[in-house]
Every structure is written in C-alpha cells, then in structure tokens.
Image (cartoon, rainbow, N blue to C red; front, side, top):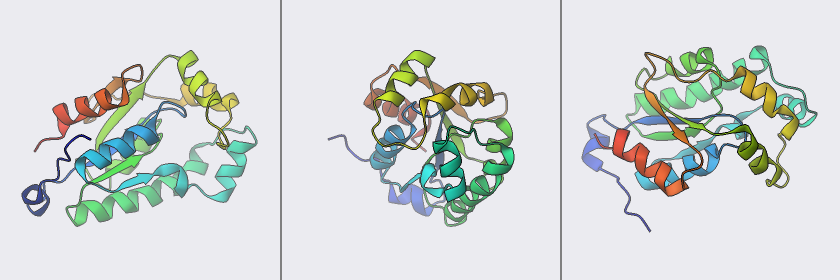
Length: 181
C-alpha cells in the first residue's frame, strides 16, 4: 500500500487542491480518481452519480447528451467544487469535462482547479467499455464523446496522461507534477 500524502498543515493553510479526472467514457476516470483521492486522503466524487435520471435514461438509450443536458449536471458538480474550495478542502472529481466550456463552468467554482485528462486510442477505450458489466453508457456513444472532446488548451491547469500506463503510474505522475504543495 502506498503512503498517503495527507498534510494537515497544507489543509489548514488553504493549499489543498481540487482535481478533475477527465476524459471520455471508458478511459478510467473513476478508477484513477478513486486512487488519486485515496493517496491524497481527499474525498472522491463520481460525476456520473450526479446525472439526472433523464440524462442516464437518455445515454442508456444510446442518445448523446447535449450542452443543455449537461448544464445542470455541471452546475451541481460546480457547487461541490465551490464548497471544497471555500472550505480549503481537497477534492477529486471524476467527470468527463469534454469541452473547454464545461471546464470553464467548473473552473468558475475554483480558479485553481487542476484537470487530469486521460487519453487513449479509440480501440483500447472501446475494449474497456465492452468489459464493464451493467454500465449505462453504451459503446455506441463513444464516437459522439470523441467528437465533443476538446483537449486541454493554453490557460488550463492540468496534464494529459496515456491510459496505457498502469493506474498507479498515472497517479504517481499526477502527484509528482501537481500533488505536492
């Protein structure tokens, strides 16, 4: 078991960080988010759990979400981020955050938000999606997510990491780059 990096002094000084582990469905956001949160001793929020019933039913039916469908969902996630920011608490959120405009909306809740973009080849992501039992997101929506995806751009704090890396290696790279105040 890796040592946790909880640092009470950092927590009290307001240096705790908020992370969003982002990418298309099937890239490993939930697993990496949970592992990163565990290493940092931060809470982990699974963004999919915040979708409305309507959104889940729409995706399960193979219908891509549009910006209007995602707006309230992103605002709800932003509320969670804002609360952590205002209380100087660390937080790790797993959330697709596909478009820059979505990330901008989340960043309104915490200008220092750090995005960890998990990237990979379509074939590998599809393979991972097919291996997930009982998930509401069908493989048929992968192409719409890839079309919507806007990689991190200038002015966005974060990093891209290849999903071919072992999960522990991905987490360690995040910690090496962003995890130490």
